[in-house]
Image (cartoon, rainbow, N blue to C red):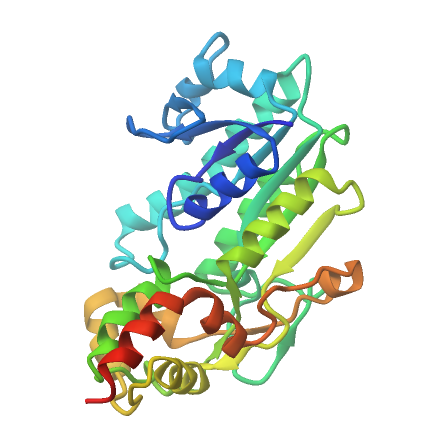
Amino acid sequence: MRLLLLGCTGLVGRELVPMLQAAGHSLTVVSRRQRSIPGVDLVVADPALAASWGEGSSLRRALEQAEGVVNLAGEPIAEQRWTPAHLKTLFSSRIDTTTHLVEAIKASPAPPQVLVNASAVGFYGTSTTASFTEESPAGADVLADLCSQWEAAAAQVPQSTRLVITRIGIVLAADGGALGKMLPIFRIGFGGPIGSGQQWMSWIARTDLCRLISQALSDSSLKGTYNATAPEPVSMREFCAQLGQALNRPSLLPVPGPVLKLLLGDGASVVLEGQQVLPRRLQEQGFAHTAPSLDAAFALVLKPAVAAATSQGPR
């Protein structure tokens, strides 16, 4: 297939792009800045701006040639304080991008066959006691509102384009994301739970997320909303204990919640609160996770780190 990829130059894209290339797809990647990505066509544009989608634009032409679209575009959620300006960026980078994309699909003389659009498990709000499946209602906090609007924008795609929405959990990879930030601290023996440690972490190995996206593009039986998480969510305390064990390092020093709140403000809620999300529809679909459990995920994504830590021995 000829595919148009938005939001695929970061953590997920680093594995997704080679995976889709290996599957024989022809790729056009959208980036807000010039970069070199071997074997792909590059469109330099900001997809959150309506002007980028003007008739005759390179982005519009790429869409009209695409048989499938992957839209993962969105500014990182927990990188900085949620000032009014940053909140506006969090919303616009997702909702405006998706809205302009869908409007362009509607206007296209040859709409793509499939749109795989991101959302997040923040859709459900937070809870230490409840569990959530795809049929659970939306929560009532800022991230739930963001995800609801994001999904509503994607849902306006014409019926001729099959829509798959992935509510993505914490993506585990050694080279970035939450795990990438935790690894340097754990490697020197200073890692530990963040906040109370009781909050849920609904996670997915990056390889499995990329496999899901790849399957959603080609498998017409996948349609609607799916929780893109592993079947075994864990508490923050258990996550840190298993990470320390995988690295042969202690996991004893908790990071106090007030410290994160001081640094990130409302953005700290992403890591201080959580939700237990189960991938029921994926399991019913027969999707087989490469890493269904956390120990399998760490074995998959931490091979170089584990080897280095083991060779040095405990300190």
